[in-house]
Length: 196
Figure 1 (cartoon, rainbow, N blue to C red):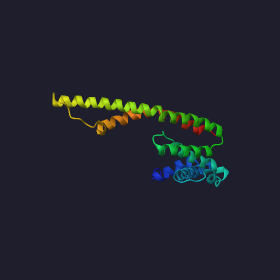
Figure 2 (cartoon, helix red, strand yellow):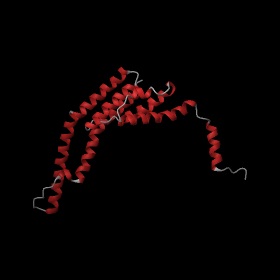
Figure 3 (cartoon, helix red, strand yellow):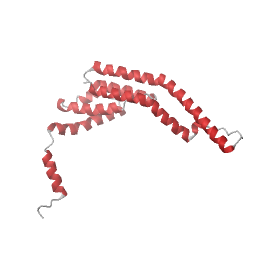
């Protein structure tokens, strides 16, 4: 009977064999979430992030910054509407406050702003043209299907834009169009992480 151990005993033995967490690990586990909370609060309210960071000891501040930065970077998105534009501006300002290398972060922001500008101008034109093409194509398919069912009589006029299948097709095409921008955005987010 001594040879049989409970699941709890085996788990405890495994935990002991792994060793204790280092002081650094404990601080990281404690202060990364603090940074995440700080960032979430910053996104909801207006306050000086550098003043809030000043409340933390130098030893743990880097973990608070790391946690906040992760939340901020996740909130950078394509400027699909005014809310997203304002959020991007606010987040980018906060990230810049967290970084020591202001020139390095501004270089990445220059590339990001180019992507945002292209998305808003040329991308908008491309989306409009593609929307019309998808709409025409869908109308033609509906007309053809209606003619096959009804025979020679002219098919009824249908509001294609409200058709669920059209909406689904448009969302799929739009996701394809946005994917090129999102790839660049992800690349620049990684660059932001690497700036000191």
